Amino acid sequence: MLVNDPQAAHYKIDPSRINLAREFRAAPKGPHSDELQRVLHRMRWSAPGGRYVLVALEPGRRWMLARIPPTRGTPIETFPNRVFTDLAEAEWHVFRLRWRELTGDDLPDDLA
Image (cartoon, rainbow, N blue to C red; front, side):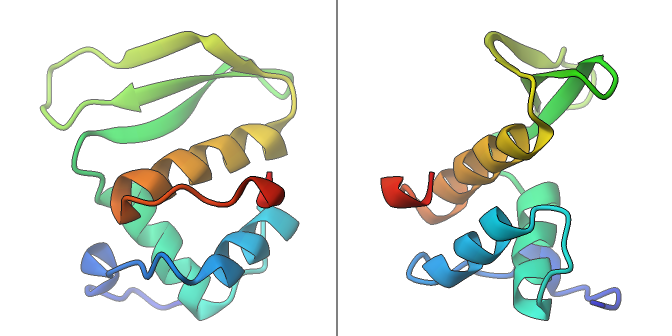
């Protein structure tokens, strides 16, 4: 388990570390290695253009992609065309978006 690491919010994600994406894809709920936990912490709290999140439309059944803007008080941006009925697939989609945003690289399609 990763202890509170103040450096994790500024952790530089190495785009060549595809093994971390594979680890997440295999077990989105964990357990995760310390390295993947640092990546996830960075993804969840330090997105430059606002954070991608999932909004529950029907708890436990349907989720919609959304983005929390970087500026407080600005409305959440929703993506009604991106609705999921499988939470693992929804989380994988968000992981891929965050990866691209923070590394500048898309993950290989064979991981999808």
